[in-house]
Image 1 (cartoon, one colour):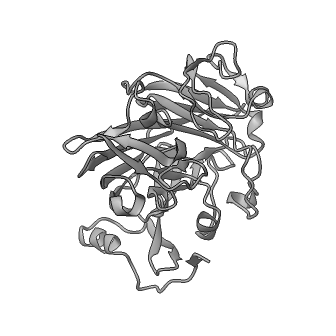
Image 2: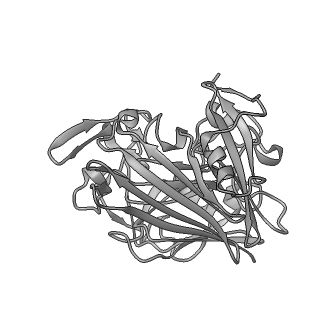
Image 3: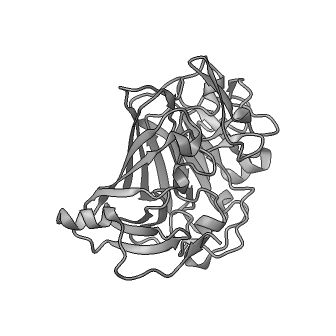
Length: 356
């Protein structure tokens, strides 16, 4: 087992002590669980814009997200730490240093070849088994409606050539906006492609009851291992032509969805890129990123209860992850997720919830 659920009352992390010392109110931060090595995982509760979010220092996870006046949670999550350790499906996590799949876990950067862990054989996925989704982040600052998480992702821990210093600010803004702003710097040339990995469900039922609209003219075909082939295909005439909203049941019946849709050839000013909707709730995604990975959870099967006692099986949620195109480092004509010393990686994404 990788966890214990008891912890001494007097025990706090250094980060928590520093927040007390700064006079920041601590009522919103509580212990949530304890790892096998004794480190405490904390939960912070944020409220604003009609939203309430419960977030964990483990993986910078959005554990629970609710909209006032709406009965069911908006994301998939768990009431205890154990499932996040025992069934690591990236529920609500921040993933990296390089999100998505790198074919064979191999890439070349500045003439040097690298071999990463193939934790999603034969590929490297979401930073590997010791990626940022498996680390304890520090709560560097917070208000009632926002929190800034920081993490140093060491090169020695992940196999990437550079160490990343990451800052991630979650803010709950007016009119149901969950705002994510990410930054990172490095000490050596490396890959940096961060992504938020919540599974959204707007009515608590089968995700195929939702509709989906995406502003994308192209998508990336994949091989049998879900690795991008290097082809950039037009969405026209395919199930991924989602310029007009379609029922997800129609799309899922036509194709398995674990796919990057191409929003642009490189980062752009933040704009609306997708809408997921039910009869009661609409979720609009705004981002400055060039790609959006979408996943229908057809392969999810977690044998423990999640939020509100719900068990998560196939089509339990829908992931929409803004990021660089997957396996871009092995496709030099695509925008590259490379970060050099003296540069700052940035991402700005918003998930906007409203009642319809």
